[in-house]
Image 1 (cartoon, rainbow, N blue to C red):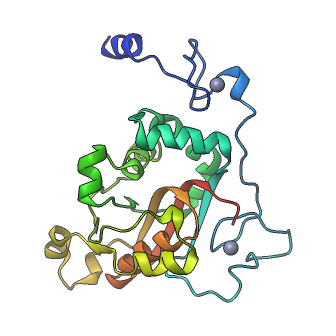
Image 2: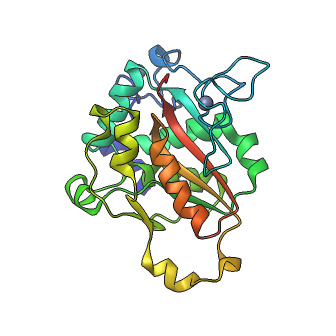
Length: 242
Ligand SMILES: [Zn+2]
Ligand SMILES: [Zn+2]
C-alpha cells in the first residue's frame, strides 16, 4: 500500500534517460537497455579493469603491492554513467542506488558469494560534504547491496577526517598525496574492538561508486588492514578506463 503510494508520487525512472518506467520495467527503459557497458572478465586482480586472457594484472598494476586482496567494478564510467551518477550524487536522485545495487548484484552474485565477506563498508564522505549533500552515495549503494546480499553494512565504520580537494582535477600522484591519511577508523569502533584484533572482521568489502586511480580504495583498505581485517575486497559501480 505504502509502496504503491510512493510509486505514484515518485515513479521509478530509467537511470540513464530519466523517463518514467512502465510496470514491469526495472532500472532501464527499453531504449536504454543496451546503453550500459559492462566490464568483461578476465579482469586485473588489483584494479578490476579488463585484461588479456593470459594475464593476472594490467600493465599499471604489475609489481604493485596493495593493501587489499582484489576488487571489481561492474560498469564502464562512460558518458551515460557519468550523467546517471551525476544525478545520483549531486541532484538528489538517491533512489538510483536501488538500481545500481541490483546491477552490481546481478553481475557479481557468484563472486560476492565466494568471498564470504562479513561486512560491507562504504567509502565515507567528509561530514561537511554530508551536511551539504545530505547523503553519502557510497553508503546508499552499500545499503541496497546489503539488502540483496544479506551481508550487513556499517556506514560509519570508517570516517573521513580530511576534507580533500575534488579528486577530479588531480593526477594520480596528487590524488595519493591529497588522500594520504584522509580516512580513519571511527573511534566508536576502536573503543569496541580495542587493541584486540581477534574481534575485528575477518573479511570486508569496501563499496564505492567510481573507481578512478584506486587511491581512495588503497587508503580505506590500509586503515582496515592496520586494525587487523585479514581479507579486504572492493566493489565499485563504475570504473574509468585508466
Ligand atoms: Zn532510458
Ligand atoms: Zn590493474
